[in-house]
Length: 46
Image (cartoon, rainbow, N blue to C red; front, side, top):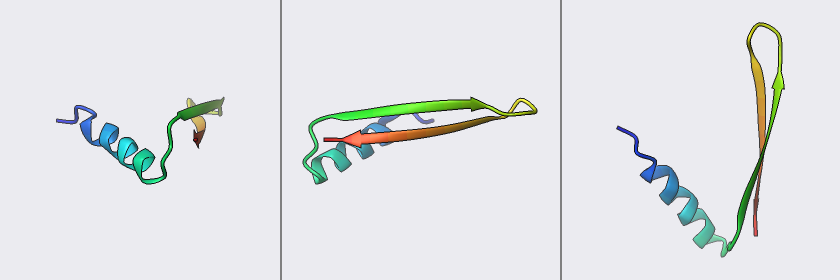
């Protein structure tokens, strides 16, 4: 059962490793043909 803990800890570990204090994510969703979507993301750590 995935409760998100691994994902949360992974991001926390990364932020500590690079001494980041802020994290932002931008998602872009483009609808394609045949009920398909192209999803891209950009993560900024400061």
